[in-house]
Image (tube, rainbow, N blue to C red; front, side, top):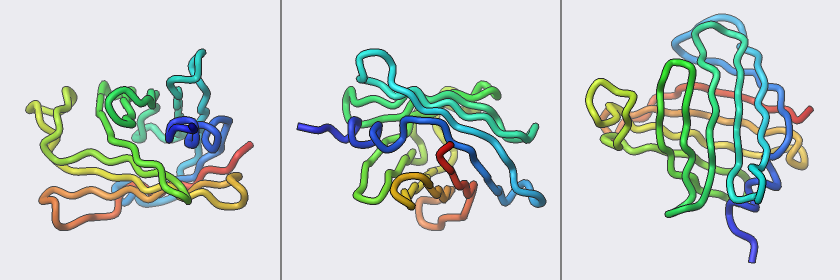
Length: 151
């Protein structure tokens, strides 16, 4: 039986170039790269990202299926977040509820809900992502938009 982690890994593993926009950073498209690989034993995916903009943090994430599929995210600002991951037929979704435990915020709870919806295109050679934030669990605002192209 193929797990959701294995399905996701088959589609994500590799090196990608990225182009992103963010509403808080108007101006040119932000270039970067992402690399995804299996940790030995293929029980966890290691997801590294780098953006060529000083205001966008570089990050490393570990995706695994311990008590449900999750992504543990760490970035150069010292931020750590835990996202729930759902695999769909055409992509995947990572999400974090408002109030989720997160050691990187001033209090112990996340002040916003966040989700990123990824869709694969062109025989998995391209992936588009659209992020959204909510401070009230009702109204969602567009956040980071990113396109990945396999190298």
